[in-house]
Image 1 (tube, helix red, strand yellow):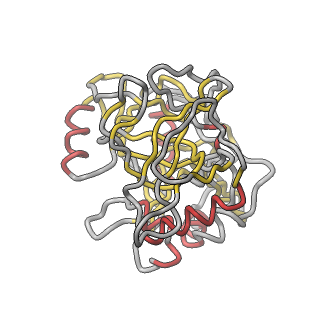
Image 2: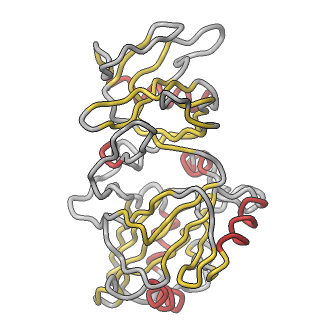
Length: 321
Protein backbone atom coordinates (compact mmCIF):
# COMPACT_ATOMS: atom_id res chain seq x y z
CA UNK A 1 0.00 0.00 0.00
CA UNK A 2 2.95 2.26 -0.57
CA UNK A 3 2.02 5.78 -1.60
CA UNK A 4 -1.38 5.81 0.09
CA UNK A 5 -2.13 8.54 2.59
CA UNK A 6 -1.29 7.72 6.20
CA UNK A 7 -3.79 9.16 8.67
CA UNK A 8 -2.40 10.85 11.77
CA UNK A 9 -5.42 9.94 13.89
CA UNK A 10 -7.33 6.68 13.42
CA UNK A 11 -9.05 3.85 15.28
CA UNK A 12 -7.18 0.58 15.72
CA UNK A 13 -9.63 -2.34 15.28
CA UNK A 14 -10.19 -4.98 17.94
CA UNK A 15 -8.33 -8.22 17.18
CA UNK A 16 -8.98 -11.94 17.62
CA UNK A 17 -6.81 -14.74 18.97
CA UNK A 18 -6.42 -17.94 16.97
CA UNK A 19 -7.61 -21.31 18.31
CA UNK A 20 -7.40 -24.79 16.81
CA UNK A 21 -10.98 -26.03 16.69
CA UNK A 22 -14.59 -24.85 16.60
CA UNK A 23 -16.99 -25.23 19.52
CA UNK A 24 -20.64 -24.84 20.50
CA UNK A 25 -21.62 -22.37 23.21
CA UNK A 26 -24.92 -20.52 23.85
CA UNK A 27 -22.96 -17.45 25.00
CA UNK A 28 -21.14 -17.07 21.69
CA UNK A 29 -21.99 -16.06 18.10
CA UNK A 30 -20.17 -17.14 14.96
CA UNK A 31 -19.36 -15.17 11.78
CA UNK A 32 -17.67 -15.86 8.44
CA UNK A 33 -13.97 -15.02 8.46
CA UNK A 34 -13.67 -12.88 5.35
CA UNK A 35 -10.45 -13.03 3.35
CA UNK A 36 -9.76 -9.36 2.69
CA UNK A 37 -8.55 -6.10 4.19
CA UNK A 38 -9.83 -5.10 7.61
CA UNK A 39 -11.21 -1.58 7.31
CA UNK A 40 -12.68 1.06 9.60
CA UNK A 41 -15.15 3.49 7.99
CA UNK A 42 -16.09 6.82 9.57
CA UNK A 43 -19.07 8.70 8.14
CA UNK A 44 -19.91 12.18 9.43
CA UNK A 45 -22.23 14.31 7.30
CA UNK A 46 -20.73 14.36 3.81
CA UNK A 47 -17.28 13.39 5.09
CA UNK A 48 -16.10 9.77 4.76
CA UNK A 49 -12.91 8.16 6.01
CA UNK A 50 -12.00 4.60 5.02
CA UNK A 51 -8.71 3.15 6.22
CA UNK A 52 -6.72 0.02 7.04
CA UNK A 53 -5.89 -1.36 10.46
CA UNK A 54 -2.69 0.68 10.49
CA UNK A 55 -4.28 3.93 9.31
CA UNK A 56 -3.61 3.93 5.56
CA UNK A 57 -6.42 5.54 3.58
CA UNK A 58 -8.43 3.32 1.26
CA UNK A 59 -10.40 6.17 -0.34
CA UNK A 60 -8.46 6.24 -3.60
CA UNK A 61 -7.95 2.48 -3.83
CA UNK A 62 -11.59 1.48 -3.22
CA UNK A 63 -13.79 4.45 -4.18
CA UNK A 64 -16.88 2.24 -4.66
CA UNK A 65 -16.71 1.27 -0.98
CA UNK A 66 -16.26 4.89 0.10
CA UNK A 67 -19.31 5.87 -1.98
CA UNK A 68 -21.37 3.09 -0.40
CA UNK A 69 -20.42 4.24 3.09
CA UNK A 70 -21.49 7.76 2.09
CA UNK A 71 -24.97 6.45 1.27
CA UNK A 72 -25.63 5.47 4.89
CA UNK A 73 -28.23 7.87 6.31
CA UNK A 74 -26.59 8.16 9.71
CA UNK A 75 -23.30 9.31 11.12
CA UNK A 76 -21.49 6.15 12.12
CA UNK A 77 -18.16 4.40 12.68
CA UNK A 78 -18.12 0.91 11.16
CA UNK A 79 -15.77 -2.05 11.40
CA UNK A 80 -15.64 -4.63 8.64
CA UNK A 81 -13.68 -6.28 5.84
CA UNK A 82 -13.25 -5.16 2.24
CA UNK A 83 -13.42 -8.20 -0.06
CA UNK A 84 -13.53 -9.02 -3.75
CA UNK A 85 -15.54 -12.10 -4.72
CA UNK A 86 -14.65 -14.86 -7.17
CA UNK A 87 -17.15 -16.51 -9.52
CA UNK A 88 -18.31 -18.79 -6.68
CA UNK A 89 -19.07 -15.90 -4.35
CA UNK A 90 -16.02 -16.49 -2.15
CA UNK A 91 -13.70 -13.70 -1.03
CA UNK A 92 -10.45 -13.83 -3.01
CA UNK A 93 -7.48 -11.97 -1.54
CA UNK A 94 -5.46 -11.95 -4.77
CA UNK A 95 -8.30 -10.24 -6.65
CA UNK A 96 -8.48 -7.65 -3.84
CA UNK A 97 -4.75 -6.93 -3.82
CA UNK A 98 -4.84 -6.36 -7.58
CA UNK A 99 -8.29 -4.83 -7.78
CA UNK A 100 -7.13 -2.15 -10.24
CA UNK A 101 -6.55 -4.96 -12.73
CA UNK A 102 -9.83 -6.70 -11.88
CA UNK A 103 -12.40 -3.87 -11.79
CA UNK A 104 -15.13 -6.17 -13.13
CA UNK A 105 -14.98 -8.35 -10.01
CA UNK A 106 -17.67 -7.59 -7.37
CA UNK A 107 -16.27 -5.65 -4.41
CA UNK A 108 -18.01 -5.58 -1.03
CA UNK A 109 -17.57 -4.06 2.40
CA UNK A 110 -18.79 -6.74 4.82
CA UNK A 111 -19.58 -4.82 8.01
CA UNK A 112 -19.77 -6.71 11.30
CA UNK A 113 -19.56 -4.05 14.02
CA UNK A 114 -20.74 -0.55 14.90
CA UNK A 115 -18.51 1.57 17.15
CA UNK A 116 -20.41 4.85 17.08
CA UNK A 117 -23.85 6.05 15.97
CA UNK A 118 -24.91 9.69 15.60
CA UNK A 119 -21.85 10.71 17.60
CA UNK A 120 -22.59 8.34 20.50
CA UNK A 121 -19.88 5.86 21.50
CA UNK A 122 -21.22 2.27 21.43
CA UNK A 123 -18.08 0.35 22.37
CA UNK A 124 -19.41 -0.21 25.91
CA UNK A 125 -22.52 -2.03 24.59
CA UNK A 126 -22.64 -5.84 24.19
CA UNK A 127 -21.76 -7.05 20.69
CA UNK A 128 -25.26 -8.37 19.91
CA UNK A 129 -26.74 -4.96 20.78
CA UNK A 130 -24.22 -3.21 18.52
CA UNK A 131 -25.06 -5.60 15.68
CA UNK A 132 -28.81 -4.98 16.06
CA UNK A 133 -28.21 -1.25 15.62
CA UNK A 134 -25.80 -1.91 12.75
CA UNK A 135 -28.31 -4.02 10.81
CA UNK A 136 -30.86 -1.20 10.96
CA UNK A 137 -28.59 1.41 9.32
CA UNK A 138 -27.08 -0.69 6.50
CA UNK A 139 -29.09 0.15 3.35
CA UNK A 140 -29.96 -2.37 0.61
CA UNK A 141 -26.77 -2.11 -1.43
CA UNK A 142 -24.57 -4.25 -3.69
CA UNK A 143 -21.36 -2.98 -2.09
CA UNK A 144 -21.91 -2.43 1.64
CA UNK A 145 -23.31 -5.51 3.36
CA UNK A 146 -24.27 -6.48 6.90
CA UNK A 147 -22.15 -9.50 7.91
CA UNK A 148 -24.60 -11.76 9.72
CA UNK A 149 -23.91 -14.44 12.32
CA UNK A 150 -25.29 -17.64 13.81
CA UNK A 151 -25.66 -18.22 17.56
CA UNK A 152 -24.39 -21.21 19.55
CA UNK A 153 -23.66 -23.69 16.72
CA UNK A 154 -19.99 -23.10 15.96
CA UNK A 155 -19.18 -26.66 14.88
CA UNK A 156 -21.91 -26.87 12.24
CA UNK A 157 -21.07 -23.37 11.00
CA UNK A 158 -17.36 -24.19 10.72
CA UNK A 159 -18.06 -27.39 8.76
CA UNK A 160 -20.32 -25.46 6.37
CA UNK A 161 -17.57 -22.86 5.86
CA UNK A 162 -15.08 -25.64 5.21
CA UNK A 163 -17.30 -27.30 2.59
CA UNK A 164 -17.64 -23.99 0.76
CA UNK A 165 -13.88 -23.46 0.74
CA UNK A 166 -13.99 -20.40 2.99
CA UNK A 167 -11.01 -19.30 5.06
CA UNK A 168 -12.67 -20.07 8.38
CA UNK A 169 -14.92 -18.52 11.01
CA UNK A 170 -14.79 -16.05 13.88
CA UNK A 171 -16.21 -16.84 17.32
CA UNK A 172 -17.23 -13.88 19.47
CA UNK A 173 -18.79 -13.68 22.92
CA UNK A 174 -22.29 -12.32 22.41
CA UNK A 175 -21.83 -9.86 25.28
CA UNK A 176 -18.29 -8.77 24.34
CA UNK A 177 -17.47 -5.09 24.51
CA UNK A 178 -15.28 -3.44 21.87
CA UNK A 179 -11.66 -2.79 22.86
CA UNK A 180 -9.90 -0.82 20.08
CA UNK A 181 -6.44 -2.21 19.32
CA UNK A 182 -6.72 -5.04 21.85
CA UNK A 183 -6.47 -8.77 21.17
CA UNK A 184 -8.66 -10.58 23.70
CA UNK A 185 -10.01 -14.05 24.46
CA UNK A 186 -13.54 -12.80 23.70
CA UNK A 187 -12.93 -12.88 19.94
CA UNK A 188 -11.41 -16.01 18.42
CA UNK A 189 -10.54 -17.06 14.87
CA UNK A 190 -10.70 -20.65 13.65
CA UNK A 191 -9.09 -21.31 10.26
CA UNK A 192 -9.55 -24.12 7.77
CA UNK A 193 -5.81 -24.41 7.18
CA UNK A 194 -2.74 -23.93 9.34
CA UNK A 195 -1.44 -20.50 8.47
CA UNK A 196 0.73 -17.93 10.17
CA UNK A 197 2.14 -14.48 9.63
CA UNK A 198 5.91 -14.07 9.44
CA UNK A 199 8.46 -11.38 8.74
CA UNK A 200 10.52 -11.58 5.56
CA UNK A 201 14.19 -11.52 6.58
CA UNK A 202 15.75 -12.21 3.20
CA UNK A 203 15.46 -14.12 -0.06
CA UNK A 204 17.58 -16.59 -1.98
CA UNK A 205 18.74 -16.28 -5.57
CA UNK A 206 16.42 -17.95 -8.09
CA UNK A 207 17.60 -20.83 -10.24
CA UNK A 208 16.66 -22.00 -13.73
CA UNK A 209 14.03 -19.94 -15.52
CA UNK A 210 12.65 -18.43 -12.34
CA UNK A 211 13.17 -14.68 -11.83
CA UNK A 212 13.48 -12.28 -8.90
CA UNK A 213 13.28 -14.62 -5.86
CA UNK A 214 14.10 -18.24 -5.13
CA UNK A 215 12.61 -18.53 -1.64
CA UNK A 216 11.75 -16.15 1.19
CA UNK A 217 13.68 -16.47 4.46
CA UNK A 218 11.12 -16.20 7.29
CA UNK A 219 11.31 -15.23 10.94
CA UNK A 220 9.10 -14.37 13.91
CA UNK A 221 9.80 -12.23 17.00
CA UNK A 222 11.29 -14.21 19.90
CA UNK A 223 11.69 -11.81 22.78
CA UNK A 224 14.02 -9.11 21.48
CA UNK A 225 15.42 -11.36 18.75
CA UNK A 226 14.16 -12.78 15.48
CA UNK A 227 13.80 -16.56 15.24
CA UNK A 228 14.35 -18.30 11.92
CA UNK A 229 11.39 -20.58 11.10
CA UNK A 230 12.17 -21.72 7.55
CA UNK A 231 11.93 -20.55 3.97
CA UNK A 232 9.09 -20.63 1.46
CA UNK A 233 9.58 -20.87 -2.29
CA UNK A 234 6.25 -22.30 -3.41
CA UNK A 235 2.97 -20.47 -3.93
CA UNK A 236 4.26 -17.63 -6.11
CA UNK A 237 3.31 -16.58 -9.61
CA UNK A 238 5.26 -14.15 -11.79
CA UNK A 239 3.26 -11.19 -10.53
CA UNK A 240 3.74 -11.92 -6.82
CA UNK A 241 7.43 -12.69 -7.34
CA UNK A 242 7.96 -9.32 -8.99
CA UNK A 243 5.87 -7.41 -6.45
CA UNK A 244 7.65 -9.00 -3.47
CA UNK A 245 11.06 -8.36 -4.99
CA UNK A 246 10.18 -4.71 -5.60
CA UNK A 247 9.02 -4.17 -2.02
CA UNK A 248 12.16 -5.75 -0.57
CA UNK A 249 14.74 -3.75 -2.52
CA UNK A 250 14.71 -0.63 -0.28
CA UNK A 251 15.16 -2.91 2.76
CA UNK A 252 18.33 -4.71 1.65
CA UNK A 253 20.86 -5.19 4.45
CA UNK A 254 24.49 -6.38 4.52
CA UNK A 255 23.92 -8.74 7.46
CA UNK A 256 21.52 -11.39 8.66
CA UNK A 257 18.93 -10.35 11.29
CA UNK A 258 19.25 -13.81 12.93
CA UNK A 259 21.70 -14.78 15.67
CA UNK A 260 21.75 -18.37 14.35
CA UNK A 261 23.30 -19.44 11.07
CA UNK A 262 20.78 -20.01 8.28
CA UNK A 263 21.77 -22.55 5.66
CA UNK A 264 20.44 -22.26 2.11
CA UNK A 265 21.21 -23.85 -1.26
CA UNK A 266 21.80 -20.52 -3.07
CA UNK A 267 23.15 -17.14 -1.92
CA UNK A 268 20.90 -14.96 0.26
CA UNK A 269 20.08 -11.26 0.06
CA UNK A 270 19.22 -10.13 3.61
CA UNK A 271 16.63 -7.46 4.27
CA UNK A 272 15.48 -5.54 7.31
CA UNK A 273 12.46 -7.52 8.62
CA UNK A 274 9.68 -5.01 7.95
CA UNK A 275 7.40 -6.78 5.45
CA UNK A 276 4.77 -9.24 6.69
CA UNK A 277 3.67 -12.26 4.67
CA UNK A 278 1.25 -15.11 5.33
CA UNK A 279 2.17 -18.73 4.69
CA UNK A 280 0.38 -22.05 5.08
CA UNK A 281 2.18 -25.16 6.34
CA UNK A 282 1.56 -28.75 7.42
CA UNK A 283 3.09 -28.72 10.92
CA UNK A 284 5.97 -27.56 13.09
CA UNK A 285 9.14 -29.64 13.32
CA UNK A 286 10.59 -30.51 16.74
CA UNK A 287 13.02 -27.59 16.23
CA UNK A 288 10.16 -25.11 15.75
CA UNK A 289 10.61 -24.86 11.98
CA UNK A 290 7.79 -24.93 9.42
CA UNK A 291 7.25 -28.11 7.46
CA UNK A 292 6.19 -27.56 3.82
CA UNK A 293 5.60 -23.78 4.04
CA UNK A 294 3.81 -22.26 1.04
CA UNK A 295 3.60 -18.51 0.38
CA UNK A 296 0.02 -17.25 0.40
CA UNK A 297 0.21 -13.46 0.25
CA UNK A 298 1.88 -10.28 1.35
CA UNK A 299 0.17 -8.49 4.23
CA UNK A 300 1.10 -4.88 3.52
CA UNK A 301 -1.92 -3.86 5.62
CA UNK A 302 -0.22 -5.19 8.77
CA UNK A 303 2.77 -3.47 10.38
CA UNK A 304 5.68 -5.63 11.49
CA UNK A 305 5.21 -4.73 15.16
CA UNK A 306 1.77 -6.34 15.19
CA UNK A 307 3.13 -9.81 14.44
CA UNK A 308 2.20 -12.00 17.42
CA UNK A 309 2.86 -15.45 15.94
CA UNK A 310 4.08 -17.89 18.60
CA UNK A 311 6.15 -20.87 17.44
CA UNK A 312 6.88 -23.79 19.81
CA UNK A 313 9.98 -22.81 21.79
CA UNK A 314 9.59 -19.04 21.31
CA UNK A 315 8.57 -16.40 23.79
CA UNK A 316 5.14 -14.81 23.24
CA UNK A 317 5.09 -11.05 22.82
CA UNK A 318 3.73 -9.06 25.76
CA UNK A 319 2.14 -6.53 23.46
CA UNK A 320 -1.67 -6.51 23.44
CA UNK A 321 -1.79 -6.30 19.68
